[in-house]
Image 1 (cartoon, rainbow, N blue to C red):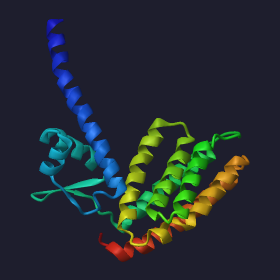
Image 2 (image 1 turned 90 degrees about the vertical axis):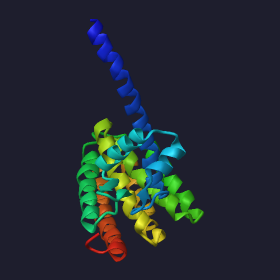
Image 3 (image 1 turned 120 degrees about the vertical axis):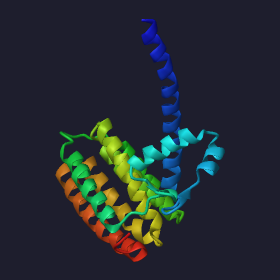
Image 4 (image 1 turned 135 degrees about the vertical axis):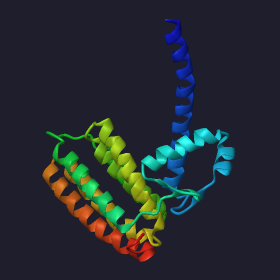
Length: 231
């Protein structure tokens, strides 16, 4: 028993480091999503580690977690960079969104549906539009679709799509006309919300599928101009 307890005590240090690395990755993920570290930015271990007051090992573990989520990329002898998506990446993100989001709506079951958080996201987008804050509108748009996925009540699906939406934000930060990118879809979010409020999940799924198809075309159009086919 003494031997097992000794091993368990050694694991406490691993748990502490893992927990800290996860917290650091949460902070960096949020900063990347906010555009604080734009795509292509090199992340300095010394600067970030000093700012957060964490060890190099902890920071490297956080980098590893975010690399696994496809938000960062490690380049040999150059360091760690915020990932720049290719056009193919963007297309794959939307393919995943179509598979997951439409399936969530299709599988909702019988109404009524709990759409309060969807309504909050639409209201958030309306406020951003009135204030001309197009970056905030993009955030509200992502919020709407995360809450849509949350209707499935699945932690695994939420976690999967958290990473997908974080990747999508990488593409949004490259676009030079966020108003053109986001504004047309506020009304579409509201239409999806209204369909769910009336219990018409088939119409909500149809609206969502058209939304994702049109959004993909628009995002790829503007993204291709910024980064080109070869990423």
